[in-house]
Length: 418
Ligand code: UDP
Image (cartoon, rainbow, N blue to C red; front, side):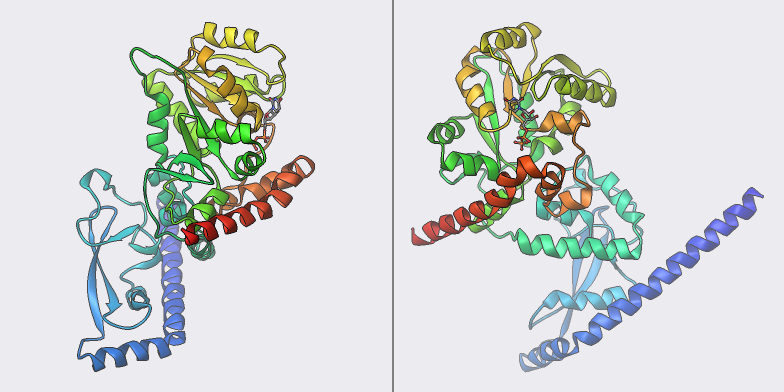
């Protein structure tokens, strides 16, 4: 019986894979037919300059295997010749990530991909375009390997949209600035290392802020907030708005460093490096619930204390935080209160690092659901937040986003004028 079921499964998997091959082949051929004028032009140009129209280039997949792809020697959209490889079944549209050249992937980063063939597109490219950092590349590729053809097509559409919206090609400088505010253009892992780094002896509490559309808009009309953001130990660029602003300022943003994507990774790192947390902010009971839920997910996570964010006396709260012995303080009082509160009190805090994290506890306590992955992949988390809290977030997003884009326009003009 089991053998029969197994046979049936193998047969149906084989059938699905054959159907997918036929669809893939047909789709590649249809695209090639549509591109015939371009192909003819490229062939003609190659003949004029006495070159073979096609060349074969070596790429390397994430497992370290060489993948050969065709490209046009001369002409436009040279990589459009890759469609020939798809039609020949040598690569898929969506599959194992590949990188041009054969020495690009250091050995330490190589791993066996769960996808059965190399692909022109992959989910890691998508996450790289938006700067989204999730837990590990392998689980992402495992999920991609299970996608059907329609999901693959949607992924490619998302990727093309993000590559158009958040074009790269600027400076990759690590310490840079926008709107007169410095920030660290870093990878998520470097940001987490910075937060968890213990200085011996510890001299002061380091403070980090997340710069986003809202904080930039607020700082434009609030000089105290502006100078507070300028005076932090580290700022991180958070969200698609900052990515667009960076693109127009000639900066290539590394990762999208926001509190919600960071917290799970920070908890994992905190477990390894024996850090402990104090959660301050949000409505009564929310920080406590967020702490409990994190401890359920990350067994052994050291949460030394929690407190709601509607307190009157700073002294009592600071006393509690210091008494707890927590090394990392997360402050969720909303902008600009959280940034101003930290700037005013950081010299009295004994923890090694404090971060202003906005509505983080609302998400991790389950009070407000997090945006679905496809929205986060497109950098549209703000649309979700607007849907969740239309009244309170109306000004921030419906008015604030166009105002921010106007600021980006002005910023671009001023950079051009330099
Ligand atoms: N909040 C607080 N004390 C205050 C004002 C706000 O604890 O005096 C909390 C509020 O309950 C919410 C968070 O601060 O949990 C602010 O969330 P918001 O969505 O504004 O932050 P964002 O992530 O958008 O910066």
